[in-house]
Length: 94
Image (cartoon, rainbow, N blue to C red; front, side):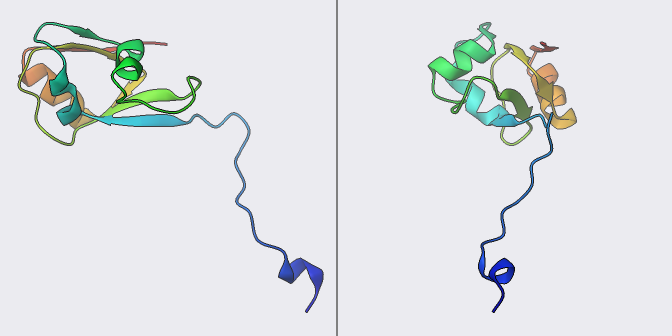
């Protein structure tokens, strides 16, 4: 068997690729009503793990029961709608 076929195949990551850490809307219920939730607060609570170079994206899985001001790098459409329906605001940070 040739050497090239015996070596493990490793995936390719494009340079400049943006990595996101996913946080679901249902996980945000640990914060108090009216709180400002930013990437620092998410990392302190352990909801966003991993290196700090990863951006945070809020996904729409779960239900939000409190009005929160959520600041993240990206939001799914359903997450932004659920945050607004709970009386909060979804703000994009850079």
